[in-house]
Length: 238
Image (cartoon, rainbow, N blue to C red; front, side):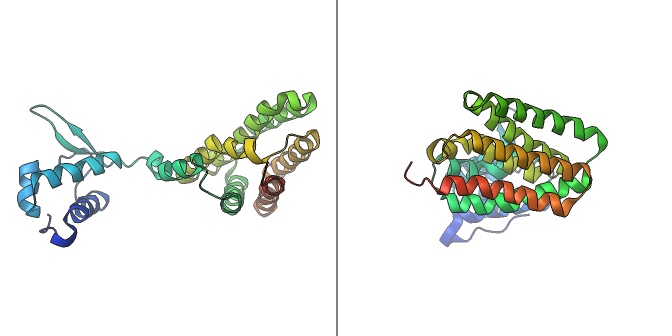
């Protein structure tokens, strides 16, 4: 199953070979990896190296390590949550520029909204309408409801992702929207007019989704995200 690890990068080679065996299906979900002593002999490396490699694979979510007489390294389903962990750290550390986030969100939110307008079913529309109504109530109440307004705006984008049906988009956008408030707090001025403009954007996006017009919905979503980002870019030293 495995080859002798390349000695110039033995640790990474052990990880790569086991990872490939799992992702290719050679070792299936629920199966155990060979015992540590067997892996040590297969890779011709130390038991310490094997243990460290298994710990890395566990952190990646590819295996779970169970102790006891029936324990061992058991292959797990790859979870979409793992896809977004690095992105989560990048956003939380605020080491991404506004420009990079803007480019990413504009493309992803546009694609998600395009897919949502193509795949939306009648049963999905009441949820979107209820979220837009929440936004309207926050806008009508003004700045004291700013946090509720932002929360509803996030829910609107996440509901579109759910309707689009791609778990990778859902996972990544969930990470973005859970952490982007750090950027809003730092760079976005709170203004009634801003709330009204963005509410109108959501109304128009909803109409395009209701009419099953993916191209129009996509461009409206891109424009909506672009406007938000332009507001923030005007306040780089806030």
